[in-house]
Image (cartoon, rainbow, N blue to C red):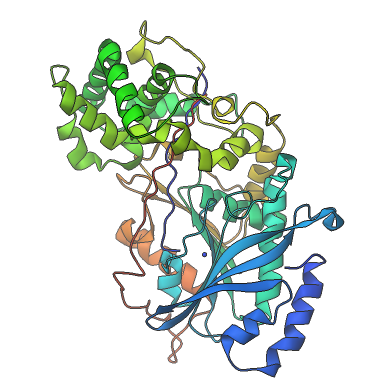
Length: 472
């Protein structure tokens, strides 16, 4: 038994040319005074190209491409186009640098920090997520330091226009990304807000997950979940037959995993993780079906919690860059399946290697995560981590040591993978908001911390993307 990685949340409420970032910034500085229009100022940055501008009330919104080196250590080896968006409010406002760690949304949204500080937002697509993928694709150039350099160059390019304070943020893999960026470029940002960001320091030691699942929620809910999980494998034959028929109808395949039967087993072992990650515990526990449930209702419940489409080739393909990173640097959560004893046919199948095409070599770097963990514990400054009590990812989260300054770890009581500042208990919410505003340098004319931007149902919607679990 190895690990499991589940749909990761994109807290949507979102976010060159070859050469040194300082040179790019300098060129942009020289070009900036020539025009007052923000679009022209942005496009004056060497390597920046407009894909489209979209109308957004109260803002200017641009979808852009920026020329990046494939390898920041050897920029002469070629470039690729990295997609980003800019939600422009004013050059006199602070800016939030957002990444989900996956694809960027081209529909305008605001991250929670952007709303709180009432600022601009730059949202970046993570390298190797299409269309921001070099061709030909050298997967060895996909690592956390290369990605941090991507952010650094974009920050240097845009900072000449947006000169006020900057805050890095993201949720889940985006929160991890914001943290790694800060580790490699600690002086770029004035603050970092990382939501529900896992921290797998030792990839082979994941007992924290077993402790989590042994104690999360109520005993009644845990018992009900264990019973229905077991029932899904007791009925394996009829459920796999249905899964295969559904896949054929929907033109879905299982070449990467190997078969519908193997994909089904992966999905079953993921159910408990997915349940606590996204289901609202206060209502979802009462809806867990009993072992006598009909096949139709069992399918419906499994699809809601796990999502059958997530376990096909078509559901997994676009997340190959994530699986690759999980199996080479990020690590993956592991936990046991005592409730499924005697029913598993493919022990150990649920891992990142299963979901990455075999022609892409993978080798795990045991140094990457311990390095980041040590830096956060001993050097974090103006960093905030927001976790959820009932979120499995909180089993292994970032912690602060004696060397950390002006940094905080907050937990939302009963919170899942959608936890944010707004859901914290009042005292923590007040503290987190005040610190964020202070980091952003936002104060009202009377010297008090400024009020957040008014709620906007379009810009402030929270998008949850279902992403396949990867279990080792």
